[in-house]
Image (cartoon, rainbow, N blue to C red):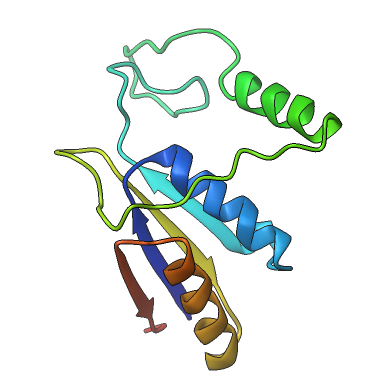
Length: 124
């Protein structure tokens, strides 16, 4: 099963993902999905023939920023505000769990970080 929580921005969802990892949840079982805010697709996107993306090193800033903060023992902790985001903004954090007890634990953590909407998706 998967526990889903919505947040007002990708940054907040990423910070809550970090908090879940700190609580012992495996990052490989988490995914953050959000609407693109930039008109160009990210560098790693698969584009249709004839389309062009923006060059550069997507994600480098976040990786370097987290590494520097970790060196100084600081973390960028953000919480939700109970709202999903404006217009096409917002982000969805999904965590795959093995059983109902893990789902309950994740649900409690998402509530503590003020997810605006929390759902448990059962496998088909």
